[in-house]
Amino acid sequence: MRAGIDKRAMTLLSAGHLGTDFANGALPALLPFLVDRFDLSYTLAATVMLASTVSSSVIQPLFGLWSDRRGAIWLLPVGVATAGLGIAFAADAPSYWLVLLLVVVSGIGVAAYHPEGSKFAAYASGARRASGMSAFSIGGNVGFALGPVLATPLVVAFGLRGGFLLALPCLAIAAALFAAVPFLRGFA
Image 1 (cartoon, rainbow, N blue to C red):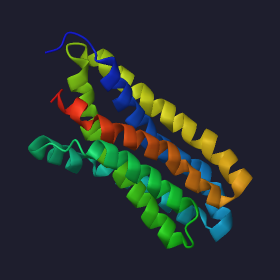
Image 2: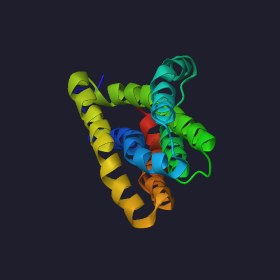
Image 3: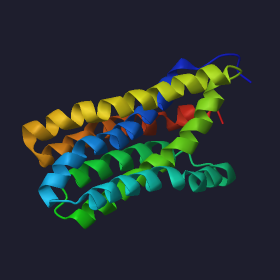
């Protein structure tokens, strides 16, 4: 077991956590605009949030089982990209039901990333697992905070179509993770 935290690996993994939670955090900021666009009731607006929560958290254990049984390092870049693309396309979807579907797709990306990201964060932490998991968590917290901070001005400036720009940070992080898969695989 390594003695300390591998900073390069933890930076990549924390960035991935930032990307998924950035997508997740953008939804509450998009919701008022979606309510206005589709004239949603409180129930329909709450259903969007419920769909996001269920798809991003309740199914995570299934991805964890998959990861434990087969290994699934590819979920790192794919999860971040899926989360970002799902929320970006949901922002300008032409119907409520498509918004709902795309929010679920985004949530699945979030759910796919977290177990594998946590596993590799533990590997990259060596004997300093508590410190490593804290660093990994910071990425998610920063991402969740940045989601609404960036989503709101984008939509105010460009309308809901500006939500497409929300995919860019997630896709950049996914590309970095994809390129780093051989490096990260060395920790398993």
